[in-house]
Amino acid sequence: MNRRRSRGLPALSLIAALLAAMGGVALTGCGGSGSGRPRLTVSAATSLKAPLTGYAADFDQADVRLSFAGSDQLAAQIRLGARPDVFASADEDLPAALHREGLVDRPVRFATNRLVAVMVAGGKVRRFADLAKPGIRIAAGSPSVPVGAYARRAIAALPQPQRRAITGNIATEEPDVAAVIARVRGGAVDAGFAYVTDARAVPELRTIDLPVQVTAAYAVAVVRSTKHPDEARRFVRGLLAGAGRDALLSAGFGPAAP
Amino acid sequence: MTRAAGRAFPIALGVALAAVLTFLTLPVVAIFTEASPGDLLSSLGHDGALDALRLSLETSAIAVGLVVAIGTPAAYVLATRNFRGKALVTTLVELPLVLPPAVAGIGLLAALGPKGLLGGPAPPLVLETAGVVVALAFVSAPFYVRQAQAAFESVDPSLLEASRTLGYGEAATLARVAVPVARPGLAAGLALALGRALGEFGATLMFAGSVRGVTQTAPLAIYERFGTDFTAALALSAVLVAVSLALLLTVKLADAGDLR
Image (cartoon, rainbow over all chains, first blue to last red; front, side, top):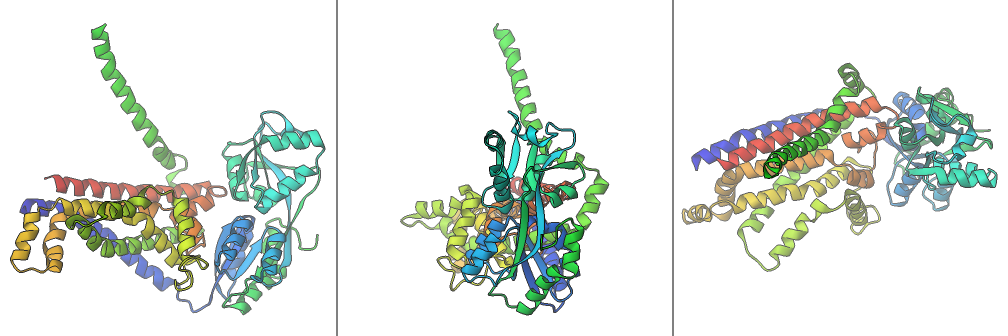
């Protein structure tokens, strides 16, 4: 009996050590965030990742925490009762709908982006017409996420045979633009519909303009229930004129007024 | 014919083993060979990768700590008492083991979300670190409770009886006799629960969201990066492989302690 008990000890002490280490980490972790500034949670479309990460890090009136996902998912979270302070969407419809439901303040347009076809250089797709060839596999956003809705708008504007062929070639519907880029880059598909800013950020990708230009208008709104309305408004103002706008422009976004 | 078959079978066995081994280790090996160690290390340093790892360790430790504190006496009851409906209770406790994580996420939202069943009285959990702890505790608890129940069941009942006749109360018998004797099994359960908590993805994403530094644990950070920063995703994965390996070794050690 005694032997059996003592055999168990090394394993247990190993776990105890592991837990102690984690506890230590947890304690130091808690100490780090006590800067006294209010915490601002910003829910933002995945395509805003690069510019907002920089802007948020330099925003000195609040400790900004970023949550990136497809705009539709972020809107769904807000409908379910999640309470970020700011919602920045890759379209104008989602924040407008939340505004009608009384969940966010009046949204304002703060940037524009352009939908393009993206592919790995040297792949099967060289011209836009190649997208309609049989056997080509295309990644698009799912219809509910703005990047997918814009892709469908672009396809709908094409002449019928091309429209049907490209629709048939859509092999996967992804939850956000990062997933579209990942499929193209990983070689799972031959091309994808994504924003020009995302394609620009990945060196091995090239882009082809669409025959009918589709402009994505981005809108941002302060969430009604925010506990820090002043900081949230200041964050939004910076996107319209200031450091946020500069970050957007240098990441390749267009100005709010197209 | 029979001699040929006699030789063929061991070869087939060897091939099967080699196939299993290659298939199961290749993805793990690829994580370490896809990018250079220097690139892996440097990409851990920027863009909040370490924040995500720290958050994973913190929330997993807290969740599993809660699971052990509450799950140990619960498992003891299941192991030492007989009551009507015990099989049903055991099954219900084990259900999250086989529940798809997305179902766990939806269930947690429906139960504890702001508009859920208990959404009014419950503290805010969605988009909060506390929500991550809840999700991790939900998915990892069955791993610990099940293992702890088995460990307590294998404790010789006469030991517990002797403890009671010596005047120990029920609480003292649990703390002084049952827990020390069942220690290896409890340790294994704890390690398994930690492993599950550290790997949790779907329920956390759906219930707590993916807010950097608040709810974005290491697996969520890997998902956020796989499209735009594959090297960073690899680096975080490499760290999780190392942690998982350490936990598995702990389980093995605990098992070895149990058998002797």
